[in-house]
Image 1: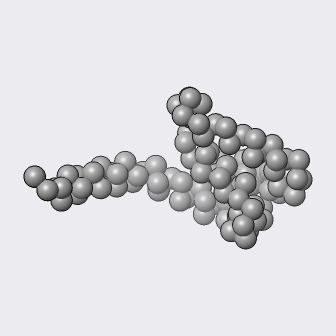
Image 2: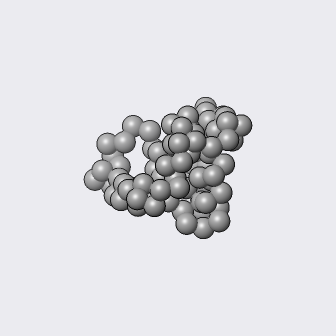
Length: 101
């Protein structure tokens, strides 16, 4: 959850190379035989962002220490849950009407 990521960032876990390596190890959960057991798939997106070694990933880890950013991420996650299914359904319906017969 964004709140837990905020706690980890404030506790400076993301500054510990061993912890970041542990997060990289956890990426095995993205494999289908493991991913099917995950209840909240957003955790895989967060895992990707936390293990990203580019400037974007480094900035995400740093920004998670800020309360305002944590609230923003939580809000975006909520909006995705609220509207994501409707957006996917609409995309499928649009693709079906555009497909040649």
